[in-house]
Every structure is written in C-alpha cells, then in structure tokens.
Length: 258
Image 1 (cartoon, rainbow, N blue to C red):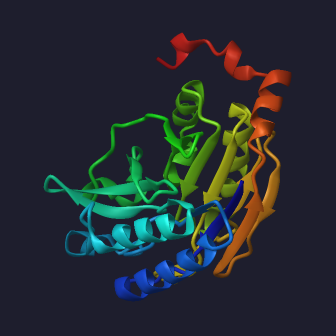
Image 2 (cartoon, helix red, strand yellow):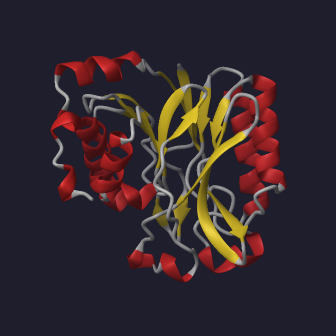
C-alpha cells in the first residue's frame, strides 16, 4: 500500500484558502497513492472562536469533493479532521472515505485539549470502534489523543492494524510528538500514520514532521517542517509478522483497562 501524508500549511482565519489548497494537494496526491491523509482542522485552522460559522455539515461541499476525488482516483482518504456541525453541536471529526468514495467511518475527537479549552468549542466523541477501510482494520485518533495510550490499546485489542493521527502539533513540543507516536505504534504492534500541519498559529510554528511508523516503532518516513506531500510504502504484512514474534497484546490484563 502506498500512502501520502499531506502536510498542509494551515493558515489562521483563511478557510477559503485552506480549503482550496488542501483540495488541490489531495487531488494531486490521490493520483499516486492508495491512501491519503490530511492534518487536523485543516479547513478552519485553530481559530476556534469562528467554528460555529465555519464548521461543515456532514454532507457539505468539502467532504463531497473529497469523496469525488476518492472515487475518481480509487484512493482512500482520511480527511484529517474537520469541524462538523451535527445536532446543534460542533465536533472535531475525522472522516474515512473508501476507494469507492463512500464514507465508512466518522471519528469525533475523544480527548479535548483542556489547556486550550477545546471543550468550550467542541463536543467530545464517544465512539472508540475499529473500522474496515478497503480491507484494512483501522483506528482513528486525533492529535491530543496521542497522550492517551489506553485509546490505542483499546483499538489494537479490537484488531486495528493501522492507526491514523492527524494533528496540529507545535514545534515547542516536537520531541514529544516523535516519542509518543513511536510508543503508540511499538506497544501495539501496528502501523501509525501521523500527519501534522505546517505554518503558525499566533506566531508559534507548527512542527510538521509528519511520520509513518512501523509496528516495531521505527520511523520509516518523515517530512520536514514546510508544506509537502510525504509518500511512503506501507507493508501491512509486517503487522502479522511482528505480532507472531512478540505479541504483547496477547498478554494484556484486560481488567486493568476495562
């Protein structure tokens, strides 16, 4: 499987430009891969005070366009995350689209970042399920979720082979980005595709360094700090090989995480 991590420069209060650029890069990447990912809240950026006005409907034009790209190029798309307006609430949602252009799963960010009072702007998600994306068992997470290993362990115990983590992760905590991403992959013997954004928010730079990490915790591809598309080959058979050799999942004391 060839994956593309679209490390988009996400700008403040520039939804129209973010959408235009994100869709352009997604369409470009889709011609050369089987699966592509976008970063967290790439349509609006982190200007959370404008979410009510800028959040998308689930059947809105941005996701419709990504569905069209997926179907046309036969490329699965994990649409990073976009603020979605449902039932009078706004969720930070990661939408998975298969190669036929069908939405197969929507994950609403479970852990909201208390330091920035995300709970004031987003409703928390409550769905922790694994889903099938073109024959691969996948688990979606978003940014701050990296700090909660129990979520990844829960997904792995459901059979997840491939984790997704779109993010807007700052340079100030860049060393933690690598550390946590590698740990989540290694401890669960699964691939992790972590796609960050480029650019700045209130003058503070985002770290970039989108990564593909194999089931042994090795970084097999890593972007720089600027906008780019990172292509990487994913050997899903490696999950089974690693789990056959040393499978910590088989030794989990489930009563500790129930």
